[in-house]
Length: 161
Image 1 (cartoon, rainbow, N blue to C red):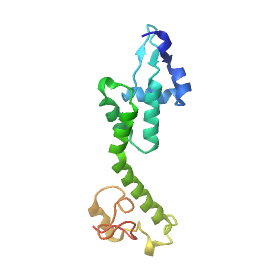
Image 2: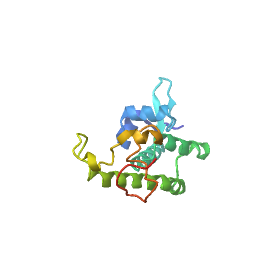
Image 3: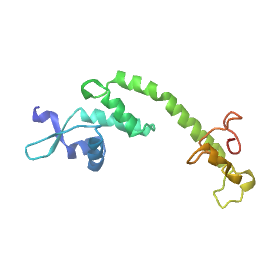
Image 4: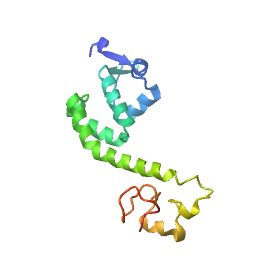
């Protein structure tokens, strides 16, 4: 490849606004690729800038790196995403983003009743779990992320097992 079509890792970091360590991480995860010179220095093609922009925008809207990596690896010849690719992928990610928005709205709405655990609002706290009834719902935080089965969000109080 002609040298004028390649950039160093430092140039890529400067142009993309991403740290060198993040670029190394992206490369280790297969999100971007470089070739090595005879002196073992990384060289990236200029279209890597567009690939990084795709990664950053996807991350910014909340798409996990594993999902981004899957999308990029599914492109023919691991090419840089096109406008059409972005339109298709963003439509596919829409329902996941809508679910996150609903979770964040439930969390936001529940915070007005919560003053932080201490807990002076125990009689009406959505996070209260008398007799550990939430254990039947599975591991992890369930009271603020799982919708109640007996009402439409937003709901007050813990989800019913």
